[in-house]
Image 1 (cartoon, helix red, strand yellow):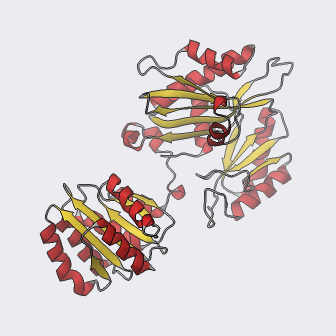
Image 2 (cartoon, rainbow, N blue to C red):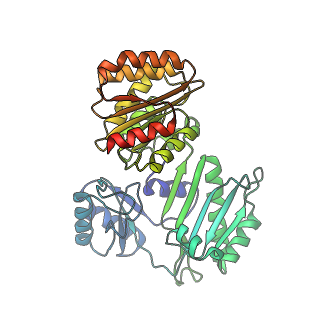
Image 3 (cartoon, rainbow, N blue to C red):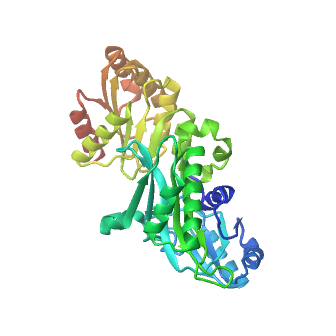
Length: 399
C-alpha cells in the first residue's frame, strides 16, 4: 500500500524526524492562507507546492513549484488543481490532482538519499544511503554504483547507533550533523520495523547552510516515501486508514474485494489465469507471438464462480481490451468452476470480443462439457489444447 507524501511526513514527525512545516489543501481558495501560515511558522517567504499523486516525475511535469508570495501560491494551486498531471509514470492520460502540499522552503547546502528496504539475497533489512540525493536512486546506481552505501541490519538487534554514526561519517556529515543524521537513520529503521513497511525512503535528506543559530547547519527530511505490506494491514489500523482509493485503479480496487490479484497494463489482450507464475508465463507467450497483455489477473486457487465472473467483468470493462485469453491449469482451482464462470459471464456481461480458453487439470472434462454447452451463448469463443496454440489464436483474433 502507498501513501501520499504529506502522510509520510506526518509519520516522520511522529518518529522524531525534523520536517519543515507544511499543510495540505484541496481548493484554490486555501492556497494563500496556508502559504502565509507555513512561511510565517518557518520564518521565510519561500514555500514549495507539490501535487499529491502516487506517481513520480512531478517536478518535470510542472507540478512542483517554488513560490515566494500568496499570489504565486494561488496561481500554482490553480494550475495544479485544474490540469491533469502527465509524466513518464502516468501515461498520456495523466492523473487528476485533488490535493496539494504547501510546505515551507529551506535553503539547501547538500542533498542526500536515505532508505531502508529488504535485501532478499541477504535475508535482512538494509540501510541504503548516498551523497547523491534528490535524483532517482536507480539512475545513481546505474551511473555511479560506488555512490551507493549499504549497511545490513541485524534482524533481532536492529540498526545499532554505531552503524548509523559510521554511515553518517561515510556520507560526509561533520560536527553536530553526524548526531542529527544518525538519529534520523535510527528513527527510520524503527519506523520501518514497527509499521511493517516494504520501503521507507527520505529523498532528499538535506543539510542547510550554517547560520548563527545552527553553526553546523540542520539535517532535515524534505521528501519521503513509504510503502507498506498489504498482508500486515490487519494490525496496522492507523496505516490502513491512510489509504486513498482515489489514487488506485478502479479495476484493482474491485479485484481486491474478491481476493483477485489484478494489475492493469497497456495492451489489448485480457488475461485470466490461476497462479502468479503461470500468469507471467502467459503474458510472456502473448508477447512472444506478437500481442500485448492488457492486464495481469491471477484468480488463485480458491476463487468462487462469483469471484471469477467478477474477474471477467473487470477485464471486459477495459476499453483497450480487444480479446481475452483464459489459461487454467487446474490443481486446487477446478476447471469446471472456471468454465461455469465463463458461462455466467456470457449471460451477465456478454463477450463481444474474441475469447480463447485453454483448460487442463482437475475436472477438465466437466469444464470442457460446460463450455461446449455454452458455445451458443459465446459465438466469439475458441478453445485450445496448449498455451502456445491459445496465445497464437488470441493474437490472430485480435489482429
